[in-house]
Amino acid sequence: MAMNLGSVTGLWDVGSSMFLPLYLGSAVVLLVAAVVHRHRLLAGRSSVPGSAVTAQQAAYLTGGGRLAIYASLAALHVGGCVAVAPASGGRLVVTGALPAGATALDVAIHQAAGLGWPADRLGEHDRVAAELAMLRTGLERAGLLPTDRVRWTIRGWAHLMQVVVIVGVFWFFTQSSDGGFHLLLPIIALSTAVTILLRRPKTWRTRAGDRALANLRAGQAHLDPAQNPSWRVYGPGGAAMGVGVFGSGALWAADPGFASDCGIPNQLDSSSTSGGGPGGGTCAGSSTGSSSCGSSSCGSSSSSSSCGSSG
Image 1 (tube, one colour):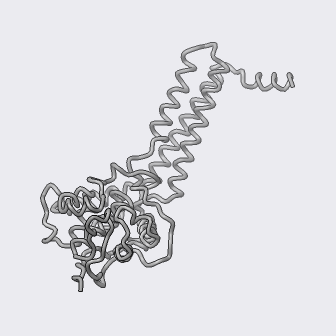
Image 2 (image 1 turned 45 degrees about the vertical axis):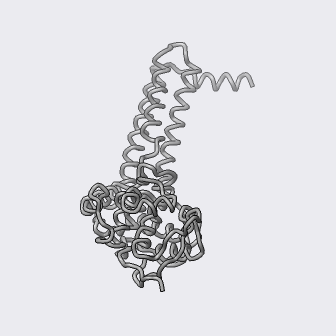
Image 3 (image 1 turned 120 degrees about the horizontal axis):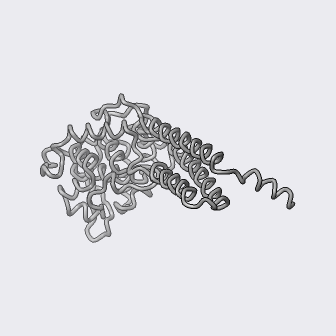
């Protein structure tokens, strides 16, 4: 056993003139490869214009599944389809029938409202969760959101760089006679890996998703809450798009009573997302219903139809 340990120690006991160039060169090559690959993975597609993105798709890109729900709620409420029951803790009630042009998510939320679901728990409703999953899948196919495989690959690069850092730290502690420089190297490698690879992006949108959303915001500037848009003028479609593009603050600005009764947080947008994607809206997939973005290109349906009045 002593001879085996001695042999291992002898192989590991190399001077800085041999180990440091090999280690540093390998670390730089791996780091550059990781950064370049990450950049390419998050590129998305450049052929999706902002005009092809619907209100609920924009909401998912901006704030994930929760904001997509709020965009649908805004359209349904402005159209007279749903409301919050008084003193009910945010439970929804149906106040009107859905029109023929309602999206699959609108239908699911309207169904949940008919069962008295609270607005802040709509994401737990099976059909709503399924439609959110369909919405996300469509955005992934359109290249506006990264797939799970892309996110796993990026994390894999991060874990690989962690191993590189651990090797450097371990070598320092076994070869610490030269002091400071050996300590500096793993610290720099560790800081670089953490800063570039281990820190999750502010959003998990692709750059194509960022561009599409930026173009959409520029084209829908009249719906900015700072412009005090009238949802009576722009209707359910404008309400959904305003929330989808500018966050839940648009709903608070237009109808603070409804937003408060629903328990909707003020200004939910991409800066408040969490989890594997925007808003953490990753739900189990389902074949129930159809999504407004269920194909490789973004769908054209939106929440622009007004609801019928209650009979």
